[in-house]
Length: 377
Image (tube, rainbow, N blue to C red; front, side, top):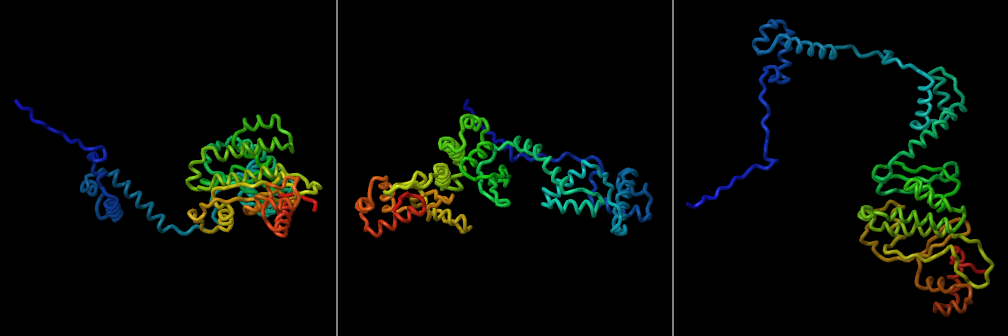
């Protein structure tokens, strides 16, 4: 006997709609508008509570509950407005509460110490000195630092770094791009590569920092190189998500790391008689038109990425006045810079670069002015 093929199509989980459970209680079936009408009829007094309960198949207790809710609404609707001098609440003021108020005024309201003193004097009739306000704020610093150290910063994907100044002193700042959480706010005496490296490593990997600082020497080029390498590794590690938003991210890191390294390798001017390239200058190559990108970022202009995918080459130099200067590097500048090893005269450099004497002297003078070449002409 032939078997007849049969098929069964079952509904998917998204197609299954559960029917609501049946409501057996008449009171639960009443809609809000019906309950309102029931309460109005009960308040009118034309019908007894028992009659209304029988008509709606509910208990008298339920009718009384609707009447009570309606009376509360009526009381609120016709209540007189509160007087301006009506007491809203009583607050027990203790010394601990006053310390919290002082911290809130300073940290949240950005009040000065003098402003805190005046507010407590005028509103609370409480005398406090500016020194006490200062001591209260600074006494909270160790506890705040302990809380800050316990924050888990592993969720920060893109960290935005910047430098601000408070009373002329640099403050290193780090903010999470996604949440604007400030994970670094450190007042410093200096803002060089060593200081940045220490603060970033403190935030990123404390154990690694301890290993580096175990043999660190302040002012040592090797220590600075170790710290800069750690910064570079930290910024480039797992950066695929960042490069989806900033495809030129690695060029930015390379640019900043190069500036850090040059600051760490800054050397004093030497009385050399032949042009010699400085250790605090180097040529860096990038896949993107980094000068145009940086200019657009600083000016908040719309950045057209497609137009900036052009290789660029920069001469980056740390000047004697503590500034790091960048210039676009042409092939002629590169030839002169790389040939200036302290053994060639200006004429030999001119012949090597294939330039005129005037052009060679002008370019060497410009590189000397920015600290890329040392030369006592």
